[in-house]
Figure 1: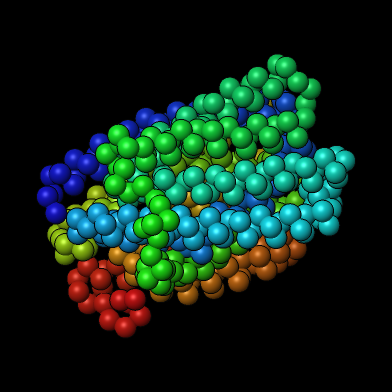
Figure 2: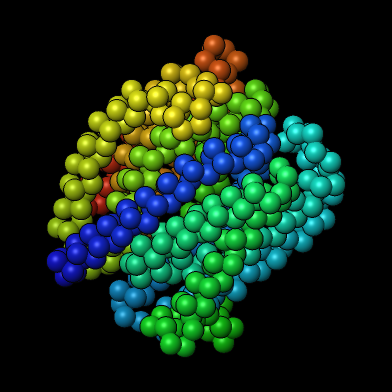
Length: 443
């Protein structure tokens, strides 16, 4: 596939992504103490819970985003620009319809929800309803605009997506800092600022991507290029991604809700501070593996298995090195917490250990998941994700109720669930790249 070109592209993307993601991490680290100082621990925990609930929307695209990512990469690898534009246009139309339906459903049901009880916070419910409308509507619009980021990733320019995320983080940080100087503490004002800023930046990016002078203008979506015949192509793959995403949602996005219901909103803050600390490893490893998804797609279409095997070897070596980094993070955790957010929040050593194990397993699984996602062999991943999604919440509940681990039990539950994927995914990848995959191993 032009091995030197492929490796150079991945290396360039990786370097630029580290630069922008590094800046993103710094903004995120600065945001936590600033937000805690502005909102206080309980309101911050309530915001985390609300944003977790609303973030479920990102899984409501029926997998269209990932379906587009693979199909667009395939069309571009085949140099079929007409087909590529039809895939883009069809996805934009379908996705917009889905978001419109969600907006209507939410508008009808939201007035009947008691957000005071859901978030366990003492703020007027009518104000909370207003906030949820702003968060929900802006999130729907943001999801549509983020299709542009999926397109740029399919074009093997993932650093641009990370650059946009960096700009969002910087401007959001400036916005929150401004709030601390000109307004009294307000969850409503904070939520509005957090929601509106990303939309403004994504609108600018969308114009850059599709304006007539852009080299990507040949992908500009239009109703004229919407093709009903491509719906099955996008959805057959997309629905499988969608089910996997729902299962992942249960595993990763319900932690805050479980902690809120079984413990308190304040404990959500403690869990998330520890998670943000260890997620640095996930972010760093994701930067490295992120360009490989579409690169795997292109290599697989061209049957360049030598390149694919070389990529796996590089990623495994990097994963082994990051294990030592995780051990170092566990040993330094309490010192970093004290320096970062002060001594007001206590985080159990057990939580640090299991979150360290969690990020290690997560990165290991991602090596194989990115390949399987890129080559659209996700049936086993589908079954595994559904199984994990079913057992995660009951397992978390049982561990909390029958151990004395507290919120650490939530992290242990996540580790056990990740082990399931670690058992079969390496074997399936081995079978595929050695042309030995048959039956479900090749679906």
